[in-house]
Length: 264
Ligand SMILES: Nc1ncnc2c1ncn2[C@@H]1O[C@H](COP(=O)(O)OP(=O)(O)OP(=O)(O)O)[C@@H](O)[C@H]1O
Image 1 (cartoon, rainbow, N blue to C red):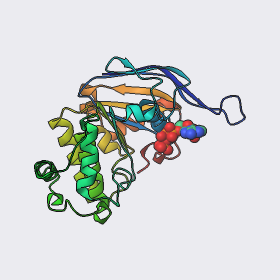
Image 2 (cartoon, rainbow, N blue to C red):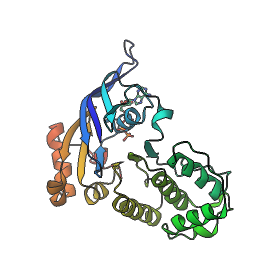
Image 3 (cartoon, rainbow, N blue to C red):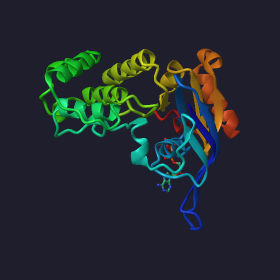
Image 4 (cartoon, rainbow, N blue to C red):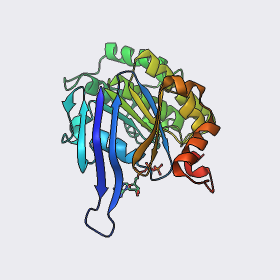
């Protein structure tokens, strides 16, 4: 479904600040895969997302989605195929707009350009989908989204991303800013949406428990490279201690502080 071939990214080339953020990264993601992505700060995880989403063009390499070469396609063109959810729960929805207007915008994205007018049938459809969140938001269509809690907004962002039918959903520590209870709710929704809609998901997390518990594949990044790629079978038996040990083996040194990887 998505093929990344020999991607390299160099920031500020030819200057004293030159920084190679990705080196020779290759990755094939199949439809329906749920890939968890871990790695210490500065490993290149967000840069990889930025390359997939088209925020930056890579310095080297090629990226294709559904066999279409999108390497040079700008971010706004790719946005209709790629859903992305950030850590900040305020980023995915427009706070000053009503819930129903937010839903219309994402619904339009799902319809890939056809104009949509808000009517009672569509409102009923929105209510039906909002019920899936089990947060009572189906009764608050006229409320501005800024009135909702961070957990409600992130759950809504997730639902809206799903409704726009992305080829791939990029989750960037999407529960890290939530309190534990809301983080759990949003993680459970993530899993149930991924299963129900057979989504293709990549999820960056610093929570090793989530990295193991969720998904069918685990990638570890370090110094701009994918240093571990663990498939479903091995992943199902993996423990947090084993991951930390694998990371230490790769670094070939005892980490002074495992927080470097765990960051929790
Ligand atoms: N726009 C940029 N300009 C210059 N350097 C950048 C830019 N974005 C990222 N980098 C550098 O690229 C490297 C990889 O950063 P990246 O944000 O991808 O890491 P990360 O794995 O997402 O880390 P974290 O877990 O801290 O979010 C780092 O050295 C970072 O400083």
